[in-house]
Image 1 (cartoon, rainbow, N blue to C red):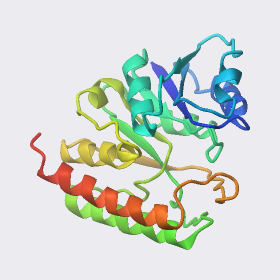
Image 2 (cartoon, rainbow, N blue to C red; image 1 turned 90 degrees about the vertical axis):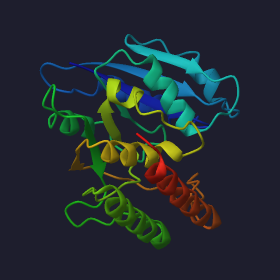
Image 3 (tube, one colour; image 1 turned 120 degrees about the vertical axis):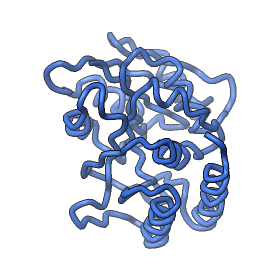
Image 4 (tube, rainbow, N blue to C red; image 1 turned 45 degrees about the vertical axis):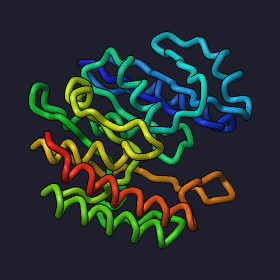
Length: 235
C-alpha cells in the first residue's frame, strides 16, 4: 500500500521545510510506502524560493500559477497522487505527522475508505478561541444530522481517504470548501469515516491563524451553503 501525503502551502516560509521533513521521515509501519506532494499556492513570502531548493527522494513540488485556494491545492495533489490513499498534512505544523501512522493502522485494504483525525476524541478541547470550538461542534452536529454521520470533528485538517473514491466525488476547488464537502459527500454516498484522536497545536491570529473573528463567522455561513448544496445535489 502507498500513501500520498499532500502538503498545501501558502506563505508558510517559517514552517514549510519542517513540515516536509516530518512528512518525509514519518514511519507508516510495515507494508506501507509513501510519497510527499507539496503544492504551493502562489506564495509571496519566500516559500516558493525555499521549495525550489528541496531535493529529497519521494518529494515532489507543484507550483500554482496563481492563488487558487486551499481546496484547489488539495485537488491538485489528489490528481497527481500515485498512492492508494492520500492524507492532507498542513504546512503550519498545527498537526503532527506521526499521527499518520495511527491513521493508516486503521485501514483494512479494500474496505476502509476514509480515516479522519479528531481534536476532541477523549474529551480534549485544545482550541485558542471558544468561537472556533463551538462553531466546529455545531457544524459537526449539523453534518451528522443531514448526512447520517457520527463524526466528532468535521473541520479537522488531517484527513485521509482513498484516492479513487475521492476522484469520483466531483469536489469543489473553492477556498476551504473541501474540508467540509469531502466528509459530507463521503457520508452521502454511503461511505464510513473512521476517526482517531490526534495531537493539535493551534495557532493564534498573531501567529498566522486565518479563520478567526469575523472570518470564522463568514466561513460558518459558507459551510451552511456547502451543506445545503451537497444535500440537494444528485449523486
